[in-house]
Image (spheres, rainbow, N blue to C red):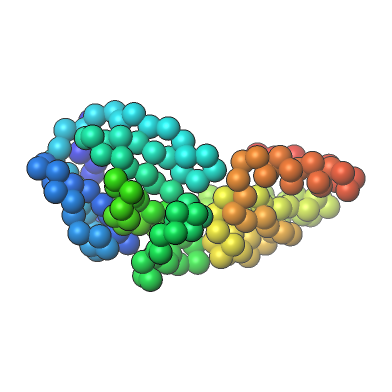
Length: 174
């Protein structure tokens, strides 16, 4: 796999190892961190409703939601907060908190217009997302949505649809 192009976007925290397998210190702030180790496809499995587990270079690497940390009794770092448009996920290596990453989605340019056109046709527009409430509210506000369901897991989205249908609502999802 080729090395990705450099990025000038600072990351909250990146976790990597050098070629000798030494861990980078947690909470290192850097514009770019790259490991020179050979890329291989790790064996990975989902962590039900929380994230993903992989074995990388013989180490257990778990990338998970804040809820996973709570379940395991792990205190997240005090500075592990994203902006109103970011969701923070955590990285554990061999069951030790190694760092976190703030993720953000970019709203497509045509989304706001699409929402407005649906609303002008008398259609209420809601969003069901796995993002945290703060991020979901920021996106909903920017798009002018009628409502939002945040921190929703995939199986919970089905429940939301069924609940709305039980109330006589017609539901369409994209």
